[in-house]
Every structure is written in structure tokens, then in C-alpha cells.
Image 1 (cartoon, rainbow, N blue to C red):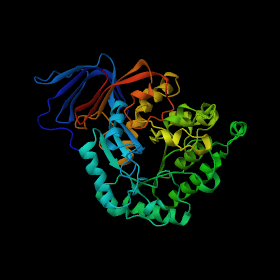
Image 2 (image 1 turned 90 degrees about the vertical axis):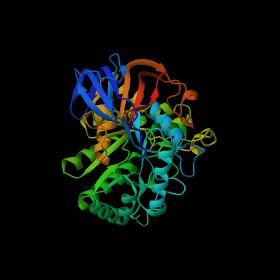
Image 3 (image 1 turned 180 degrees about the vertical axis):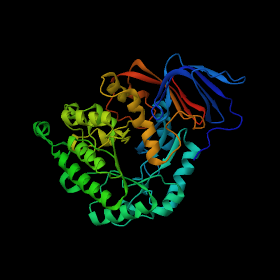
Image 4 (image 1 turned 45 degrees about the horizontal axis):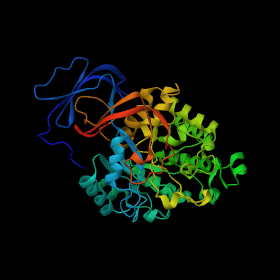
Length: 434
């Protein structure tokens, strides 16, 4: 992990800030002192330190930095789509202080030496924290487990086969049993590969009208129900990386009520967009899983408000122009999201569907708890991974100005209300809005 702070860094005092900490319930106007890369003091009346730099937040929100649980960062093997350097710049601009990198790279992150490579690249080129997830099966083939214990020792924080589900229930049960011995977190994609084969968008009336093959929501629910049952059998910590439909929310709620150690995430795109946004074959809205119906979107939002949906992610998946500007059925799935995750999420706050502390909990506090990271809250001694943002500031997204190497955003020309003003990692400012 990169050491961002140094003993020579000056203390920083943030004043006139709306301090929001989802973990403690703090929501008050006050000040926060950062010293030595950590939070030194916090409260309504923090005295100024003699040599501290003072940042006047002017009533803007000061909150824990966001933690994105599962972004594609391009390295190794897809540097033409994204690099750790460009992904971390985009993350900083979006208020994300920690990226958890997916393992579906070339080669996959299925050996300790590749985990070590990613850690070194993040240390040398990243401006935010980058933690690697490791592959759950060798080569992401779904056949043979990786060495979970060795990968944990090397620094992997969770295990996943990325956008692929493990077809074999026997392999999945064995992996869960082994992971439970290490208390490792499995972050799994839930879609039946046979049922979605050839599908381009959500199966339904709109897909039929557009003449596009569909990917049924049932393909997600089938695998999710299987995995939830296996998690209950094995006692494994299971996280469904993305749930996208009402039935999945219901399945997750039922499993939680039964006491299973299960959690789930939803992407900001699935929470704020629906299948109608595909419009006239707009490939930047082609994702996997696909955007669902408005009823499904509303169920996800309610699940987030109720706490059934634990985590909100960017589902950052950069694609170059050649793979997106094709006929819809032939275009690659995926959209970038690191830079727009918070801004898009604030739409749910302004609409009254989700409170601001609940949104921030799903983007910072809860991911930190799942991964066993020390961030995600504002407390003395905690790492000074912070964001300052104005939740009311209006702006229009211009895709050309994004920091990501790829520009495949579904939010081009979108009107947002809420902008990140400053991002701080271990006490050091890595982004300011000019």
C-alpha cells in the first residue's frame, strides 16, 4: 500500500464544514484537524494549530472518502482501456479515495506474484489507495480454486471471478467452504451464463420492440438463490457484487432475515438509469447485467434505503471507442463510473429516496467494514481519507473532460447537482476543483 503521508506534511485544519460520519451518526457543523496522515481532532470547536494550513469549507460536506468495491483498472494487459494512474485520477476527481481492483485482467490476478505486481504499480503510479481482489478460480475458468490463503497473505482483500459466475455448484460450495476457514470475502457475479448467452439488453417488451435478444432477470435470481443457499450451508461471507432486479432484492432480504452472512451491492447506473435509456440503440448504456425496468430500479432504490442493498459501486468498466461504437448487439458491455458515482448518487438524495448519510454509508462505511479496512468514518486516529463536496452545486458533464482514459460514460451531457471540491488521501490533497 502506498504511503501517501510523510512526517514533513503540514497539518491541515478544515473549518466551517458540515461533518457527516455515517458510522457514528455525526451530522453537524464543525472542524476537523488532520496531522500525520490521520484525523487528530474533530468537533464543533477545534482550536487552530499553529502551523496548520486552514481550509474553509464554507458549509460544504466533509465526509469519509468513498471506497469503490470492484473497478476495472486495466493493469495488467488492458492499458489501452485504463491504467492505475488514470483510474486513480478519475477516482480522486469523483471523491473515491480507495479503489478495489477486479482480477479479470491479462493475466488474471490468480497468483501471489500478480497481487504483488498490482500493489507495486499502485504504489508507484496511483494517487489513491488501490487494493487488489484476487481470482476465486484459476484462470477465471470456474473449475479449480485458487490458493486463497497465499493470496490473502500477498495482500488480496477479497475474491471474485469478476463478471463471470461459477457454473458448478460443487466448485462453488468447495470454494465457499475453503474461504470460510480464512473468513475471506467472496464477491460473486450472479448470472446464469447459459440463460444470458447472446443477450444484449433486459429481456422484455422494449427488447422485443427494438429487435434485440434479451437477458432475463431470472438468470440473475437463479444463481443468486443458489449462492445464498450455499453461503448458508458453509457459513461463508458472501457478497453479491451486483443485484439489479426486484426478485434479487427479495432473495437477499430473506437470506439476511435467516441470519446468513450475506451482503450485496448495486451499481450507480442500475440505481439511476433504466432500460428506456437505451433509446435508439445507445451502446454507452449497454452493460452487464443490463439496465432493468423502472420497477426493478425502484426496488433497488428502496433496497438501498432499507439497508438490504449494502454497497453502491461505480461498476467502472472502461471500453475503447472501437468496442463501443458498433451495432448494439456487437458492442462490448460496460461503462465508466468512478468520476460520476457520487454525483449520480446525489440524484437519489435530492429526490428524497435516500438520505445523504445512508448514501455515504453505502459508498464508504459499509465497504470499509466488509473489507476490514480502517477508513470509512470520521474518528480521531482514523486515516485522513476525506472528501469535501457541495451537494447543491449544479454542473453538466462533458465526457471529454473526464480523467479516465476511456470516455464510455452513460452520463454524457447529464445535469448533476453536487460536485466534489477536494479529495484527501492520508492527509494529502490529491484533487481540488478549480
